[in-house]
Amino acid sequence: METSNYRRLQENLEYLKLKQIGLHLNAVLDANQTTPLSFIDTLLKLTDYEREVKEHNVTNAMIKVAAFPHLKTLNDFDFAFQEAISKDQILDLSSLRFLEKQENIVFQGSSGVGKTHLAISIGIIAAQNRNSTYFIKCHDLIQNLKAAHAENRLEAKLKTYAKYRVLIIDEIGYLPLAADDAKMFFQLIDKRYEKKSTIFTTNASFQSWIDIFQDPMIANAIVDRVLHHATVINIVGHSYRLKNHLQQD
Ligand SMILES: Nc1ncnc2c1ncn2[C@@H]1O[C@H](COP(=O)(O)OP(=O)(O)OP(=O)(O)O)[C@@H](O)[C@H]1O
Ligand SMILES: [Mg+2]
Picture 1 (cartoon, rainbow, N blue to C red):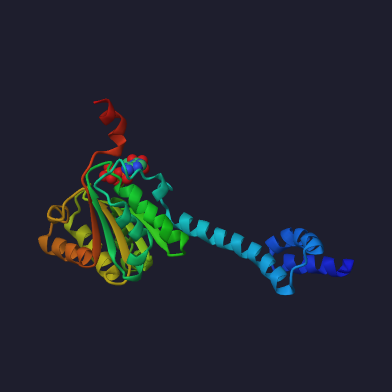
Picture 2: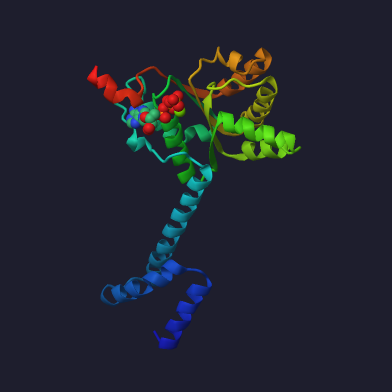
Protein backbone atom coordinates (compact mmCIF):
# COMPACT_ATOMS: atom_id res chain seq x y z
CA MET A 1 0.00 0.00 0.00
CA GLU A 2 1.37 3.44 -0.90
CA THR A 3 2.36 5.55 2.10
CA SER A 4 0.04 8.40 1.09
CA ASN A 5 -2.88 5.99 0.65
CA TYR A 6 -2.14 4.36 4.00
CA ARG A 7 -2.21 7.80 5.62
CA ARG A 8 -5.43 8.71 3.81
CA LEU A 9 -7.01 5.45 4.94
CA GLN A 10 -6.07 6.24 8.56
CA GLU A 11 -7.60 9.71 8.13
CA ASN A 12 -10.80 8.22 6.70
CA LEU A 13 -11.08 5.77 9.57
CA GLU A 14 -10.63 8.60 12.04
CA TYR A 15 -13.16 10.79 10.21
CA LEU A 16 -15.68 7.92 10.12
CA LYS A 17 -14.97 7.16 13.79
CA LEU A 18 -13.92 3.59 12.98
CA LYS A 19 -11.40 3.59 15.78
CA GLN A 20 -11.13 -0.18 16.22
CA ILE A 21 -10.37 -0.73 12.54
CA GLY A 22 -7.66 1.92 12.83
CA LEU A 23 -6.23 0.21 15.90
CA HIS A 24 -6.20 -3.27 14.36
CA LEU A 25 -5.23 -2.30 10.81
CA ASN A 26 -1.49 -2.86 11.19
CA ALA A 27 -1.88 -6.24 12.87
CA VAL A 28 -4.29 -7.42 10.17
CA LEU A 29 -2.00 -6.14 7.38
CA ASP A 30 1.00 -7.88 9.00
CA ALA A 31 -0.89 -11.14 9.43
CA ASN A 32 -2.05 -10.91 5.81
CA GLN A 33 1.56 -11.02 4.62
CA THR A 34 2.12 -14.49 6.06
CA THR A 35 -1.42 -15.89 5.78
CA PRO A 36 -3.30 -13.88 3.17
CA LEU A 37 -7.04 -13.57 3.71
CA SER A 38 -9.52 -12.81 0.96
CA PHE A 39 -10.75 -9.22 0.60
CA ILE A 40 -14.09 -10.15 2.15
CA ASP A 41 -12.48 -12.01 5.06
CA THR A 42 -10.15 -9.09 5.74
CA LEU A 43 -13.04 -6.63 5.76
CA LEU A 44 -15.06 -8.97 7.92
CA LYS A 45 -12.26 -9.33 10.44
CA LEU A 46 -11.78 -5.57 10.67
CA THR A 47 -15.49 -4.77 10.92
CA ASP A 48 -15.92 -7.50 13.57
CA TYR A 49 -13.47 -5.60 15.80
CA GLU A 50 -15.51 -2.44 15.35
CA ARG A 51 -18.83 -4.17 15.89
CA GLU A 52 -17.70 -5.97 19.04
CA VAL A 53 -16.70 -2.75 20.78
CA LYS A 54 -19.85 -0.89 19.63
CA GLU A 55 -22.09 -3.70 20.91
CA HIS A 56 -20.22 -3.71 24.21
CA ASN A 57 -20.69 0.06 24.55
CA VAL A 58 -24.42 -0.15 23.78
CA THR A 59 -24.87 -2.93 26.34
CA ASN A 60 -23.01 -0.93 28.98
CA ALA A 61 -25.15 2.11 28.24
CA MET A 62 -28.38 0.07 28.55
CA ILE A 63 -27.22 -1.32 31.90
CA LYS A 64 -26.34 2.19 33.11
CA VAL A 65 -29.75 3.54 32.10
CA ALA A 66 -31.44 0.66 33.97
CA ALA A 67 -30.17 2.12 37.27
CA PHE A 68 -29.70 -1.23 38.98
CA PRO A 69 -28.63 -0.78 42.62
CA HIS A 70 -26.00 -3.51 42.06
CA LEU A 71 -24.97 -5.84 39.26
CA LYS A 72 -25.38 -9.31 40.76
CA THR A 73 -26.04 -11.93 38.12
CA LEU A 74 -27.53 -15.41 38.04
CA ASN A 75 -23.98 -16.78 38.30
CA ASP A 76 -23.74 -15.11 41.71
CA PHE A 77 -26.94 -16.82 42.88
CA ASP A 78 -26.54 -19.90 45.06
CA PHE A 79 -29.45 -22.09 44.00
CA ALA A 80 -28.42 -24.79 46.47
CA PHE A 81 -29.07 -22.39 49.34
CA GLN A 82 -32.62 -21.57 48.21
CA GLU A 83 -34.19 -24.95 47.53
CA ALA A 84 -37.67 -23.52 46.97
CA ILE A 85 -36.46 -21.98 43.73
CA SER A 86 -36.42 -24.08 40.57
CA LYS A 87 -33.20 -23.26 38.73
CA ASP A 88 -34.79 -24.47 35.49
CA GLN A 89 -37.67 -22.04 35.89
CA ILE A 90 -35.29 -19.13 36.50
CA LEU A 91 -33.17 -20.17 33.50
CA ASP A 92 -36.32 -20.29 31.39
CA LEU A 93 -37.16 -16.74 32.50
CA SER A 94 -33.61 -15.69 31.66
CA SER A 95 -34.23 -16.82 28.08
CA LEU A 96 -36.48 -13.72 27.97
CA ARG A 97 -39.38 -15.67 26.45
CA PHE A 98 -41.62 -13.83 28.88
CA LEU A 99 -40.75 -10.55 27.17
CA GLU A 100 -41.98 -11.77 23.81
CA LYS A 101 -45.32 -12.59 25.43
CA GLN A 102 -45.51 -9.36 27.45
CA GLU A 103 -45.73 -11.42 30.62
CA ASN A 104 -44.92 -10.32 34.14
CA ILE A 105 -42.84 -11.93 36.87
CA VAL A 106 -43.60 -11.63 40.57
CA PHE A 107 -40.97 -12.62 43.11
CA GLN A 108 -42.75 -13.12 46.40
CA GLY A 109 -41.30 -14.04 49.78
CA SER A 110 -39.92 -12.82 53.06
CA SER A 111 -36.82 -10.68 53.55
CA GLY A 112 -33.47 -11.79 52.20
CA VAL A 113 -34.64 -14.78 50.14
CA GLY A 114 -33.22 -13.34 46.92
CA LYS A 115 -36.18 -11.54 45.29
CA THR A 116 -34.32 -8.36 44.34
CA HIS A 117 -31.19 -10.31 43.36
CA LEU A 118 -33.15 -12.48 40.91
CA ALA A 119 -35.14 -9.54 39.54
CA ILE A 120 -31.89 -7.66 38.85
CA SER A 121 -30.22 -10.74 37.32
CA ILE A 122 -33.02 -11.09 34.80
CA GLY A 123 -33.05 -7.33 34.24
CA ILE A 124 -29.34 -7.41 33.43
CA ILE A 125 -29.91 -10.11 30.82
CA ALA A 126 -32.76 -8.08 29.33
CA ALA A 127 -30.58 -4.96 29.13
CA GLN A 128 -27.65 -6.92 27.69
CA ASN A 129 -30.01 -8.01 24.94
CA ARG A 130 -30.85 -4.39 24.18
CA ASN A 131 -34.25 -4.26 25.82
CA SER A 132 -34.86 -0.94 27.54
CA THR A 133 -34.91 -1.81 31.22
CA TYR A 134 -35.43 0.24 34.36
CA PHE A 135 -35.23 -0.60 38.05
CA ILE A 136 -37.07 1.41 40.68
CA LYS A 137 -38.28 0.84 44.22
CA CYS A 138 -42.04 1.15 44.55
CA HIS A 139 -41.71 3.95 47.09
CA ASP A 140 -39.47 5.99 44.78
CA LEU A 141 -41.79 5.34 41.85
CA ILE A 142 -44.74 6.70 43.80
CA GLN A 143 -42.76 9.72 45.01
CA ASN A 144 -41.75 10.49 41.42
CA LEU A 145 -45.33 10.14 40.17
CA LYS A 146 -46.56 12.40 42.98
CA ALA A 147 -43.95 15.03 42.17
CA ALA A 148 -44.90 14.87 38.50
CA HIS A 149 -48.59 15.18 39.40
CA ALA A 150 -47.86 18.27 41.49
CA GLU A 151 -46.15 19.80 38.45
CA ASN A 152 -48.92 18.83 36.04
CA ARG A 153 -46.62 16.36 34.31
CA LEU A 154 -48.19 13.10 35.49
CA GLU A 155 -49.18 11.90 32.03
CA ALA A 156 -45.65 12.45 30.67
CA LYS A 157 -44.11 10.66 33.65
CA LEU A 158 -46.51 7.73 33.30
CA LYS A 159 -45.59 7.51 29.62
CA THR A 160 -41.89 7.41 30.51
CA TYR A 161 -42.40 4.50 32.91
CA ALA A 162 -44.82 2.80 30.52
CA LYS A 163 -42.34 2.71 27.64
CA TYR A 164 -39.62 0.51 29.19
CA ARG A 165 -39.67 -2.99 27.74
CA VAL A 166 -38.89 -4.25 31.25
CA LEU A 167 -39.75 -2.30 34.38
CA ILE A 168 -38.65 -3.73 37.72
CA ILE A 169 -40.77 -2.43 40.59
CA ASP A 170 -39.02 -3.47 43.77
CA GLU A 171 -40.49 -3.76 47.26
CA ILE A 172 -44.23 -3.61 46.85
CA GLY A 173 -45.90 -3.64 50.21
CA TYR A 174 -43.04 -2.43 52.38
CA LEU A 175 -44.84 0.89 52.84
CA PRO A 176 -48.62 1.40 52.49
CA LEU A 177 -49.85 3.69 49.75
CA ALA A 178 -52.37 6.50 50.10
CA ALA A 179 -55.53 6.06 47.99
CA ASP A 180 -54.44 8.70 45.44
CA ASP A 181 -51.02 7.05 45.13
CA ALA A 182 -52.66 3.68 44.50
CA LYS A 183 -54.65 5.25 41.66
CA MET A 184 -51.49 6.54 40.00
CA PHE A 185 -49.89 3.13 40.43
CA PHE A 186 -52.95 1.55 38.81
CA GLN A 187 -52.66 3.92 35.86
CA LEU A 188 -49.10 2.77 35.26
CA ILE A 189 -49.96 -0.93 35.58
CA ASP A 190 -52.89 -0.42 33.21
CA LYS A 191 -50.68 1.32 30.63
CA ARG A 192 -48.20 -1.57 30.70
CA TYR A 193 -50.83 -4.32 30.82
CA GLU A 194 -50.42 -6.76 27.90
CA LYS A 195 -47.92 -4.39 26.26
CA LYS A 196 -44.77 -4.54 28.37
CA SER A 197 -43.32 -6.88 30.96
CA THR A 198 -43.04 -5.81 34.57
CA ILE A 199 -41.07 -7.62 37.27
CA PHE A 200 -42.35 -7.11 40.81
CA THR A 201 -40.82 -8.05 44.12
CA THR A 202 -43.01 -8.19 47.20
CA ASN A 203 -42.95 -9.56 50.71
CA ALA A 204 -46.76 -9.52 50.86
CA SER A 205 -49.38 -12.01 49.70
CA PHE A 206 -51.73 -10.82 46.96
CA GLN A 207 -54.53 -10.80 49.52
CA SER A 208 -52.67 -8.26 51.59
CA TRP A 209 -52.15 -6.07 48.51
CA ILE A 210 -55.72 -4.94 49.34
CA ASP A 211 -54.37 -3.39 52.55
CA ILE A 212 -51.34 -1.94 50.78
CA PHE A 213 -53.39 -0.22 48.10
CA GLN A 214 -56.12 0.67 50.61
CA ASP A 215 -58.98 0.83 48.08
CA PRO A 216 -60.15 -2.80 47.45
CA MET A 217 -61.46 -1.99 43.96
CA ILE A 218 -58.17 -0.46 42.85
CA ALA A 219 -56.21 -3.23 44.58
CA ASN A 220 -58.21 -5.92 42.78
CA ALA A 221 -57.83 -4.17 39.45
CA ILE A 222 -54.06 -4.00 39.98
CA VAL A 223 -53.72 -7.64 41.08
CA ASP A 224 -55.93 -8.77 38.17
CA ARG A 225 -53.73 -7.08 35.59
CA VAL A 226 -50.47 -8.11 37.23
CA LEU A 227 -51.47 -11.77 37.45
CA HIS A 228 -53.35 -12.23 34.16
CA HIS A 229 -50.13 -13.13 32.33
CA ALA A 230 -47.54 -13.74 35.01
CA THR A 231 -45.08 -16.18 36.49
CA VAL A 232 -45.22 -16.03 40.27
CA ILE A 233 -42.14 -17.30 42.04
CA ASN A 234 -43.00 -17.82 45.67
CA ILE A 235 -39.81 -18.20 47.65
CA VAL A 236 -40.29 -19.92 50.96
CA GLY A 237 -36.92 -20.15 52.64
CA HIS A 238 -34.33 -18.64 54.90
CA SER A 239 -32.81 -15.21 54.48
CA TYR A 240 -29.44 -15.32 52.73
CA ARG A 241 -28.48 -12.32 54.82
CA LEU A 242 -28.70 -14.56 57.91
CA LYS A 243 -26.93 -17.49 56.24
CA ASN A 244 -23.94 -17.49 58.54
CA HIS A 245 -26.08 -17.11 61.65
CA LEU A 246 -28.27 -20.02 60.54
CA GLN A 247 -25.24 -22.25 60.10
CA GLN A 248 -24.01 -21.44 63.59
CA ASP A 249 -27.35 -22.40 65.17
N1 LIG B 1 -29.41 -17.73 46.94
C1 LIG B 1 -28.58 -16.68 46.99
N2 LIG B 1 -27.31 -16.79 46.54
C2 LIG B 1 -26.44 -15.76 46.63
N3 LIG B 1 -26.76 -14.56 47.17
C3 LIG B 1 -28.01 -14.39 47.63
C4 LIG B 1 -28.99 -15.43 47.54
N4 LIG B 1 -30.14 -14.96 48.06
C5 LIG B 1 -29.89 -13.71 48.43
N5 LIG B 1 -28.61 -13.36 48.19
C6 LIG B 1 -27.96 -12.09 48.54
O1 LIG B 1 -28.48 -11.74 49.82
C7 LIG B 1 -28.81 -10.36 49.88
C8 LIG B 1 -30.31 -10.20 50.05
O2 LIG B 1 -30.98 -10.68 48.87
P1 LIG B 1 -32.12 -9.82 48.16
O3 LIG B 1 -31.77 -8.36 48.26
O4 LIG B 1 -32.37 -10.36 46.84
O5 LIG B 1 -33.32 -10.14 49.17
P2 LIG B 1 -34.85 -9.78 49.05
O6 LIG B 1 -35.60 -11.05 48.94
O7 LIG B 1 -35.04 -8.77 47.98
O8 LIG B 1 -35.11 -9.16 50.50
P3 LIG B 1 -35.95 -7.86 50.95
O9 LIG B 1 -37.39 -8.29 50.99
O10 LIG B 1 -35.44 -7.56 52.33
O11 LIG B 1 -35.68 -6.77 49.98
C9 LIG B 1 -28.29 -9.77 48.57
O12 LIG B 1 -26.96 -9.33 48.80
C10 LIG B 1 -28.30 -10.96 47.61
O13 LIG B 1 -27.34 -10.82 46.59
MG1 LIG C 1 -35.41 -6.78 48.01
